[in-house]
Figure 1: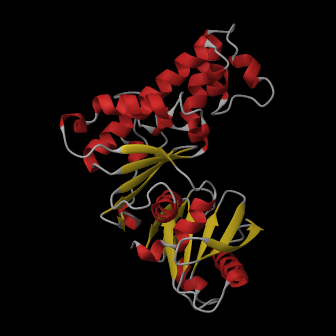
Figure 2: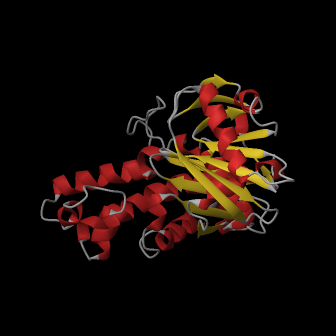
Figure 3: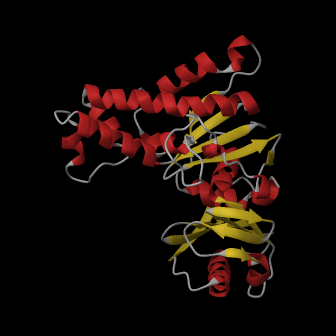
Length: 304
């Protein structure tokens, strides 16, 4: 048995996970960060709520960079160069394994979702940015070697990225990028139905897909361009790694399959080197949703 903790933007969720990757108990508390020491104590207390005899370790998935038991930095809470495992074990004497959230999503899907039965597997998460988690020959490429595929350049001298470069994949293929593309289309085509779909909740990652589903040509053009951007980075990733499966997760992945995954598969098939022979990568939807982070964090020790 293992414990996995998913550090989200507003909540901490802990789950007791069995050998098959099934969640058998869950607890959650609001995220109220009061410094690294208090955070470590909260993690230990939360883990204790699902603790059972025979638990081998506690895994934690969080947005940021990790190295062994240390947090190098996090994006949603102010931690930098924090020896989190050492602080945690002052409260609960179990090994603490750390992974970033994209890596944990990949591990979860590898054991219990779209990656079952593979050895070479990737998860691409389409959210605020583009996250990538890689399993190669059954082992996680994590820690200091975690992928930053979202910062591959697909458009030289393109949109400025927060990383300091221009034209990064995530500036175009993230939900954030899609929202910007949708807003520009609305400004250029005020007659479009995009305004109708954005009227209630503002422009979201799903807005263009909703309007395209209703038959709006401007929205359909946005969706087609977005798929081209997504395919451009994915082809480079696939040609470099040749995984058996790439799973697509994150909020954008909920778009209708005929508007996202089907044209994405077609675009990738045309450009991937596998068209000349060798392994052809399958592109699938991620299966675990919000459970992937807990399951993946819990199973970290099986792929490190």
